[in-house]
Length: 435
Image (cartoon, rainbow, N blue to C red; front, side, top):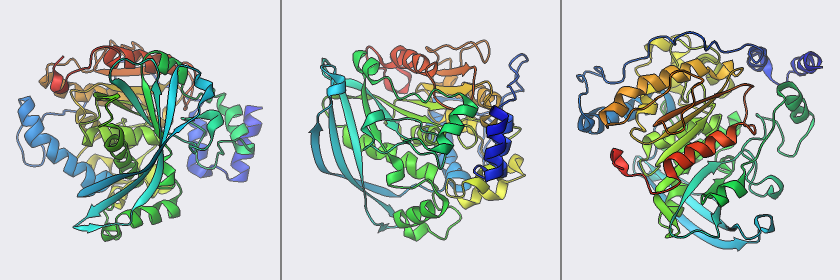
């Protein structure tokens, strides 16, 4: 039955050549028996600058240079300035949470300034769910969801499938579930509330749609002065920027602990969450699940999705400058271990699955190893595991590796929660490596 469904998908052209290659790789498996290839260096010379030897050197010299290079060559440039306004705020009845929590809904207006010119403002909704029994400011998990906020029956729905898969079902959704045997799991909100965590969600496609033409048009509207530039920001950077706008709204709420705000994202939003944490130190930790190419997986020497594949299939995700590295990834001046390192010393969770070869779990593990020297500068251990299968939720970089394929299933949430409780469940974790 799986083969018949796969043949039907290929025949209908629903996934295209790259999508069919991804489906074929789903029956491959990541080799975790051998030692991964040598990790890349994070502290060596870069862009004419010498080696980095102290945490101050990293913060003051290397980190700014890397952020500039990531924007120049991969993601495009963030705005020079941003404005966030709360238009409306109202409580929402949420009987499904009984006495455990309460829900509020915000309407937000955001605008960006590029090269001194403010772009058109955009309006979107934010949902804030807080535990009713909280004593003092609570930690919050900041999520970007795959389904609209109006879809209350599965709210917030973290994963609803890929492009074209309706959140409410449909033939492609059913075939995808058949092929991958996914458990399309929504967050265990009651468990999070019971453990004292709040949840903040948006539907980022309200601002930048995840379709090439509509996405590019939205990006141009958000930054018209950069529209023709090969460093015009892509959707990953823009969605990352939205994490920061969410923090603008909730970060000053006295009910929320400003030192325990965790960005959460899966797949494309896992890329955006990692990018956001690398560029906004108000984010105190990040869960980047199966973020793959352009996320936590190395671009150089990788398996699965290549620069050519991702820029062809998703031309709106990155700056067009990234297209130039298709087939010549070795020429990239930066790689994803440095993006992870930009989060140091804050905790990072990297989720992976054995049959998700397209997202290159081995490349993600090597990237995590490559970020270790930066964590060590801050007196942290970084990735503290014996191998890919030795999950350590207490680690500064926690690498999770489960059986199965791409998606979020019911095996993932206990690992996410273990990481959250280890780092954010009790006393707030200090910034810059201080407990």
